[in-house]
Length: 441
Image 1 (tube, rainbow, N blue to C red):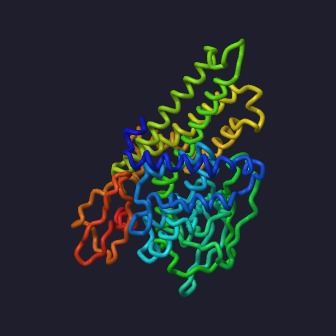
Image 2 (cartoon, one colour):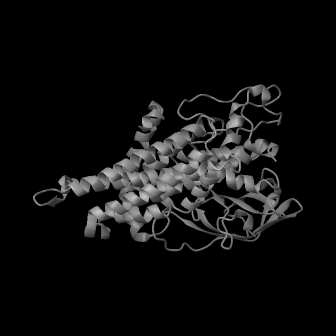
Image 3 (cartoon, rainbow, N blue to C red):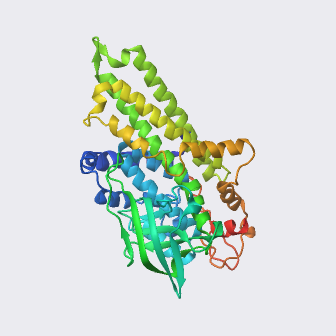
């Protein structure tokens, strides 16, 4: 089914990632589960494969392969280790803020390093007292000459303990126009990472706390302009967060089916394989059905995104369907394994634990349902993907004059075309989303 949305290059990439995951990741899973702490070496090894740069334009050393390619990379890693799939998705989420809001100097500085695996980026938005209510944040940045001074605390930051460059959204003023985004290097004085806390699942991945105590950064580290913070947070979550987490759920779901069918084929009951029992076949059929629907929703959504078509609803629905169906299938798998599933010599209990971790980020299932309900009532709050789609539809002659015209939009997945075009008086490359968002105000 998914090959409707992929071509030979995608499938070659899938094979490459799968082979790497089996060779390099699977042998380390038991150690990550036992240690329950971030796996620095494996995170760096995966980053050096270049996959963090899936949506980074080739002009900056990235793959320029788009969101379908990004999805299959995360899916294949998550099929073996959801923790490492989560590591990649969190860094690719950190890429979005630079791709879409960074100026030319920021892109030249950071995107090649990210694409080469030398820098792992993060995005830090959530705070203890505000949770998913972005406008409730209280962390601040105050201008002081040529610098900004940051104070506050962020929680649930993916790759907190391996990140080199943190994209931090904080308050510079009041209301929705009072949020701004900054790039904060991990070695800045006044910045520190809190101790890693034990978690239910995703062992090997870190999602911890960042602290800013009079952390001074140059004004050049401002992403976009003051007041762009809300756009940075929401666009990154919608265009990257939802599909990325969808892909992690999809990889877990595939692993659930693979492990459970293998268990049913080898396990004997009443002189026959467990798979011959009608009740077992029904449960396996439900898992298979859910997985087919989940994969269709996942790849359809990112295919639309790569084609430059509005797809906020599809991205919401893909996360909803994949998270809920992976949890349901993991529970069915636990039922089939019975007492065997309670012990860590089999991975099915890990799948269930890991699946729960994908529920809350980028909006819980209730949030996705609320937004979909608003869409059904004609009360949608605007589409971030349509802003990207409109930008991609612009002819080169319609691009505004921005001097360097920084590259911002990923190339269509798997086609390999160079989407840059020459505009008189400009360098080659599409315009950034920052300009497009500014026009919508």
